[in-house]
Image (cartoon, rainbow, N blue to C red):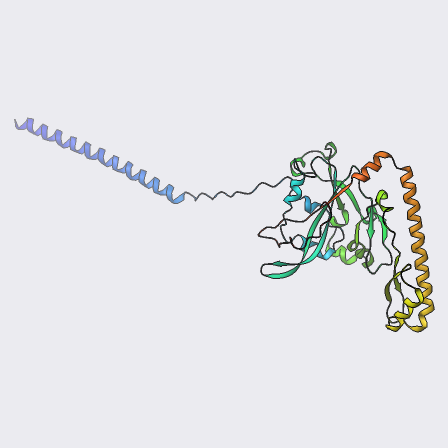
Length: 342
């Protein structure tokens, strides 16, 4: 009896030890699992927040691509200091827009205006884009004019390193340009692409100023005969103290009286009266000759012009686009100078 009881007691003891060992192993596994979870929790990196960027519009950079002709070089940076919105120009090329499906030539320019911005009035260089609807380039010449010049100078665009080049929308920029039948052309200036501060300092002042006073020269042979030719000449008479700047109209002004008035106003020395009059007469002769040659050139051009070209000139249209108001840009709605049809 005792021996049997002893075996039972021993058996119970072994069973208890097995259970304890099994429980200890389970506890070890559980602790290891908790430790692993804690380790993973410590070493796991925080997930970065996703950033969302708006897709670029297909013609978003069109206004920047069109060279701002006539803008001073040192003002170019200020033109792009704001993220101007020309979505109105972009929409004009969409179905139903005034430029949809048409061949268009575009150039930029700027208009310095005093406009309110962030509670104060500032002079801002406002970018403007002009779109010309035409089946062929509307001009291959540049007109250079300023109050300091006696007459407008007409030069080939290439002389000023300018030309009409195709504009490629964003969605087509992976394609070969020669395979695209572009309907959009922009005025480009290679002088700007090579522009730098050093080059600016090395450029001659006269050459530099030409860029600041130039605009595309548009020749309209069908309409210019309807316009009265100017009878005014710009006079810049050299003098020892200071040059004489004035305008003389050979139909409205009488030369002797005009000269006497300048002398009375101390604008002209009395002993320079005869020399001044001869100077004015020479400028008048040059202007009349230029008018006569222009009339003859227009007449010849019209005689040689095909009906197709005449129709193209008649249907040529100009549209002017200003940036639309946004919270981040100055409001230019009150300073727009619009043309008929723009």
